[in-house]
Amino acid sequence: MAVSETYEDPAAFWEQRYAGAEPIWSGRVNQTLAEVVGDLAPGSSLDLGCGEGGDSLWLAERGWRAIGIDLSATAIARARARAEKLGLSAEFVAADLGLWVEAGEGVDGSAAPFDLITASFLQSPVALPRERILRAALSRLAPGGRLVLVSHAAPPPWAQHDHAAHGAHDPTRGPHFITPEDELAALGPLESEFAVLVAELRQREVADPQGSLAQIDDSVVVVQRHQALPEVR
Image (spheres, one colour):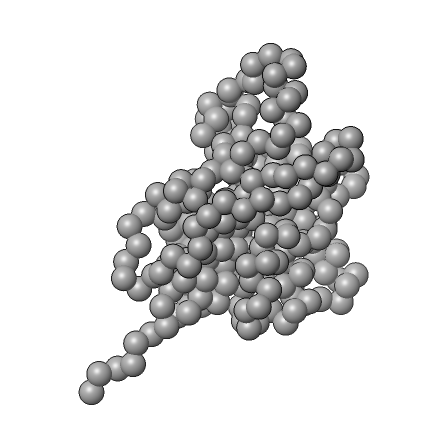
C-alpha cells in the first residue's frame, strides 16, 4: 500500500474526495460486476465501499434486498437521494468498514448472512484494512452465497503515457493495483466450504480523457460458499 496511508485520516480524505457539488461517478453499474452477477437469482446483497450507490441501485432494480456501506457520509447521502428519486428500497449506511469488521455483526446490527457481497474497486491511497474486511465478508456469506471482487489490475494506458511524459510517479500517492493472485492471498487459505469460481483478468472498454476508446484491465475474483450439506442420519 502507499506510504501516505499512515499519514492521512481516511474519513477526511474521502469526504474531501466527494466534496464537490456534483457526483463523481456515473451512477451506472460496474460493467464487469453486471456480467458476473446478472444471471443470479435475487437475494440479499451487501456492497462494500459502495460510493454513490450505482451497483447497489442496479441490484435493487433487479429485485435484490440491497445494502451499501461506505465511509463517506456525502457519498451515502447521494446514494440515498438517488434511491428515493428512483423509488428503490436500497439501504445505505455511512460507516467505517474497519469498525464493521470489529463489530462482528451485519450493518443492520444483526449477524444475518448475505447471498451476495460485492466490492468494486475497494482500493484506497489512504489506510484501509482491506484484508480483514474481505475475510470478514467471507464469513458473512450465506450457504451458496458469493463474494465478488472487481479491482483495478493496472493503470489505464493514458496514465502510463502521462507518467512517461512527465517523469516518475510519486510512490507515496500511487494506487495499489491488484491481481487475482493478490486477491486470493488476501482472502487467505480457503476452507473446504468455499470454492473459487473465477480468478482472472478481464478487459473493459472505457473512454480516455480525450474521448477515445481504450482497454483497461480488471481483476475479477468470485468465491462461493458451498450449499449446506444434507444432514447424515
